Amino acid sequence: MKRSATLVIDRKENRTDGSILQAVVWLLPIPLKGSLHRYKYRLYYGKEGECLVRYDNEQGKGDHRHIAGSEEPYQFVDIPTLLHDFRQSIRDTGADI
Image 1 (tube, helix red, strand yellow):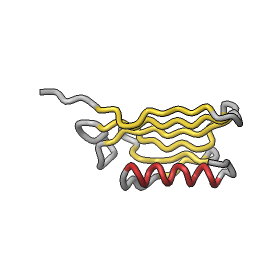
Image 2 (cartoon, one colour):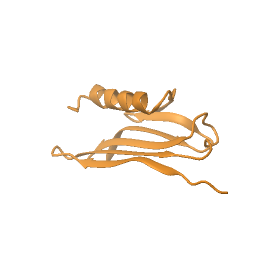
Image 3 (cartoon, one colour):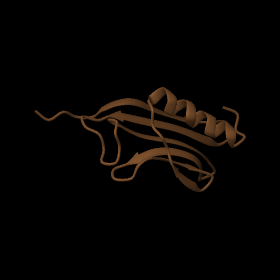
Image 4 (spheres, one colour):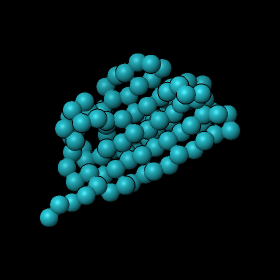
């Protein structure tokens, strides 16, 4: 029997300052190649077409984040920690969140 992915979070907020916050998280039947957990996620914060903060995991690439144009590995713990770290990275840009 084939199991399918379950959507856990799907939110998008167009903020009054022109910025966009988006969070999409799936629970997968098996981990993506390069990840030890079963979540597939994409968390995005940007403004005026520019990505300021993004956390995601890609098959084969694993967990990582993009901050101010730089990419670095990210140590995934769990979803609450992921959301906390994402919010903190946005705050570090000077945004009010």
